[in-house]
Image 1 (cartoon, rainbow, N blue to C red):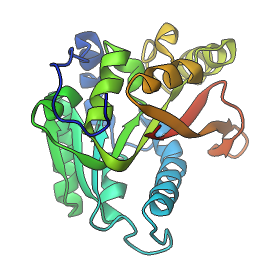
Image 2: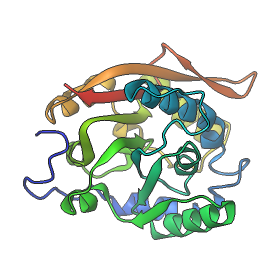
Image 3: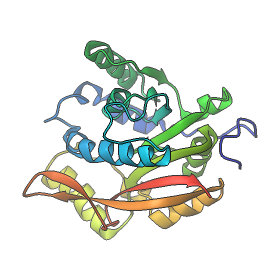
Image 4: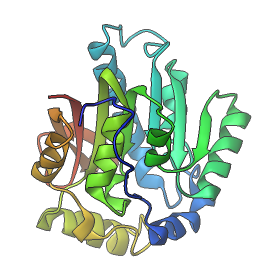
Amino acid sequence: MVPGAAGGSALKTTIDRSEIEKFAAMAEAWWDPTGKFRPLHRLNPVRVSFIRDRVAAHFGRNPEDLTPLEGLSLIDIGSGGGLLTEPMARLGAQVTGVDATPRNVEVARLHAEQAGIKAIYLNCAAEDLVAQGQLFDVVLAMEIIEHVADVDAFLEACSRLLKPGGIMFIATMSRTIKSYAMAIIGAEYVMRWLPKGTHEWNRFIRPSEMARGLRAQGLAIAELTGVSYNPFKDTFHLSRDLDVNYMAVVKPA
């Protein structure tokens, strides 16, 4: 599959209805920094700076500029309440957030309006935009791949949304004993950061599995970095540890 190609056969659905219902029940909590999405609020500064710096380098921009993503089209797949979409808009990108949960989109639209953020939010799946032939300079698939119904179909949809010469980011959790202990037992049962059942360990994706799926779409992982949590400082930071959370920079092979 050639990245950026709008044609080709119709994609399978990536929507998992049980996952939609799960996140619909938590939609009102998206912008509460101490609520059910507290981990994402704590993680967001790391995600934003990582994406900003890599996109700026890829397109020859200065990451220290106020709007280094000015003029670039960006899609945030699985945008939820807009926690990542809004910072991307503030950095100058022309952003589209898509989410399969209607209530998430409503919450995101309302918050963006109140904050004066220009962003397009659509209640759909990635494959719906593929069918429309839409293309983007930057594709974000952050903390979403572990919730889709068909990983290979999702990666194909992401690849077909990417413009030639574009850049993609994928973040997820690796399927390891350590991730089960920290992301499931620790985060959901001990710390109670997330409702029980938010994540299913068997859905986590190892980096090697992601790389294999991307190769089938003519893409490759250009950079892989772990994201680790410091319980003493209550902060996340980039690391070499890929056993729990990690982020991948993806480009055409």
